[in-house]
Image 1 (cartoon, helix red, strand yellow):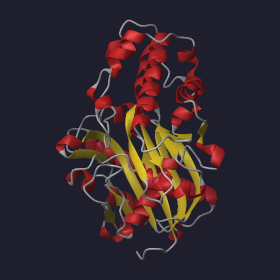
Image 2 (cartoon, rainbow, N blue to C red):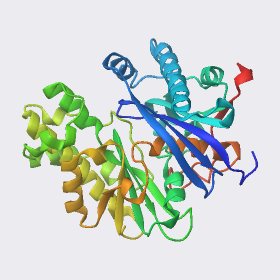
Image 3 (tube, one colour):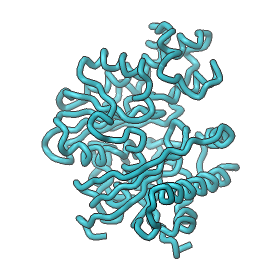
Image 4 (cartoon, helix red, strand yellow):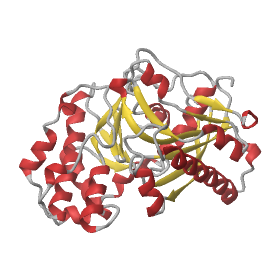
Length: 366
């Protein structure tokens, strides 16, 4: 695809929170022109969520994973059709789909990352070319394979004052620092646990999928010694680039705590990890913009703003859609992939050089 051509792309994301599929439309040249369109989130039912959770830590060829990957793909195809139908968009108007799939295993130190989902099947089901497998080339070259949204963050932030930090609080939290010297003046890395541990704790403690609004944590007390044990992890002493698997941390250190105290301590962990991350910024960020599910946790946002002592706002304050940002990012990256442009940089994943990536599947390739 010629660089600079504006095309219509759809992105699909199933994140580490395991909450559902996000699907979003973007018109973009894959460089600086970004016109986000409609998007929808489709929650997973509890049964499928547990089947998907059962794939964590597994490779694509282990028993049971292929069936889940097929269902994930068919659900993704249905999400694409629903987005098009709800917005009166023809399939023929879509140039490409960026399909992230679901990360089940992320071990970049072993040059291994696994995202399950069938790009060929999705292309057949939608009749649209599909780019998937975004991370493998980066990891094979020695990069971390994450985070992968920073170039999109930088494109969106073209007119926002800088230095700026864009923080995604999903299952794992990651940050993009954006300077003022052009679209590649960025640094990105996973800060630490985001919502995943808190969601797991809340599900086990009170049979709820998340701590809605931070109400559980707000009523609890932070146990300093337990928090210190969680923070005594080599990950926090490593400089970026660095990335995490969803299950690199566990709630074992909180055994015996009340539901509220465990939630408060895990919220404090996410915040402390984010605050430590700013030590690696080339210059202090004058503002933090937050996307992902964590921005809806009022208690977390209040505590984070106090800890960072600079403005901390949901991305909606600058007109972005915090629920759809990652899905939009993979639409954008699919266009960059088709144009042969880099989708990761040494400063975002630790790749040895700017790298393109992704695998293209055409509908007729079957």
